[in-house]
Image 1 (cartoon, protein in one colour):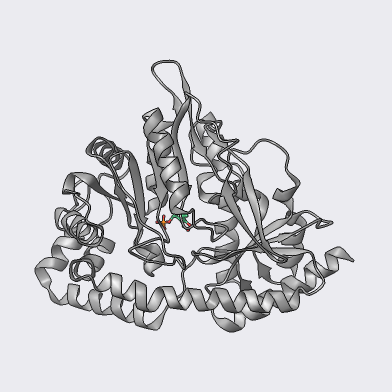
Image 2: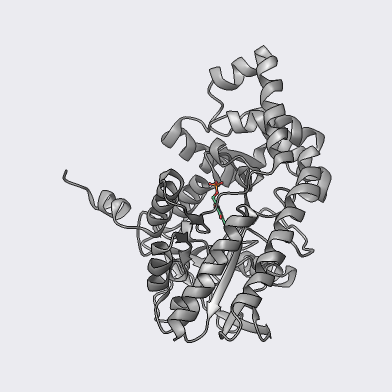
Length: 416
Ligand code: PLP
């Protein structure tokens, strides 16, 4: 097959492809695997029961079901869902959103594809614009999204050592430069892979920088408030006409429904709708139909606060406690877990690369993600990139416990 340049770019070995491949193989193979690599949320009994209940209610309401599966939504999404989402956000946060401020996409992953390529790349004015990631490390899924491969710019963090084994990354505002060729600033909050949550102060400064430059600030809220609320610190959610807030139903337990939600000014929403129309006519409506009543009633917020958040917070604490015990004697740091499903482990002076550690762990049936994939747009060499791995703690207790034990064994072996 003769491939176009775009075809070659999107079919070469990408980080996200390796991750999804390993995830699929791990789930389908017969050998015992400890799946600490992927981004699958846990299947929580109370949440799964809520989705099954909503599915039954949808099936029983024949006209609602027939419309949900038998009709295309508009390229912006189904009006009733757009209304429910804006109503919920306005009630919760006192925002002033209308249906013109929201669009649905087939997962938030595809929203990033649209947004990055809407904004970055060569423009009619001859300027080749970039998406700026102000805080490394950042989500692996951004890495290969730009059709023009050079469209990212990234900045190293300031590392705060909280104590002997805990650290936190901060935006290094002294080093950060937002040049005229920057199309947008983008952060995930909580951050995948680190579990970091940018402080309100950091978000306010980034937002002010974006305003000053007249560019959007994209905030990836896949784990944030009000749902799924996998966030362990108190932060203030923000939105204004300069901010593009991306949300998702995936970490609520619906990754199979592929439903992303973009909250932005009507100009951006018009563009996302146009991309939707071209790439898929309309976003899938089943996830939105399932979630509609839970969003209208606010029940989704209660479930997120009372069931989802405590589950992950407890899992995070348990994993940290175990690792602190098992890694005794190793010069390691764990990023302060403030949200999302992951622990970010930094092994200072690790004598092998994180890719090698990944390979050794894979041999033993443990899947993690090597840290070096989480630096989209960072061109400079930085040893730190090779000293970290991302570990998912969302899976069942026995799996996480056994996986962490093997990780600690292999890390210790690497230092011998
Ligand atoms: N953003 C972040 C930070 C993520 O971790 C993920 C998935 O893991 C996504 C976006 C994409 O999620 P989805 O396309 O399932 O909405």
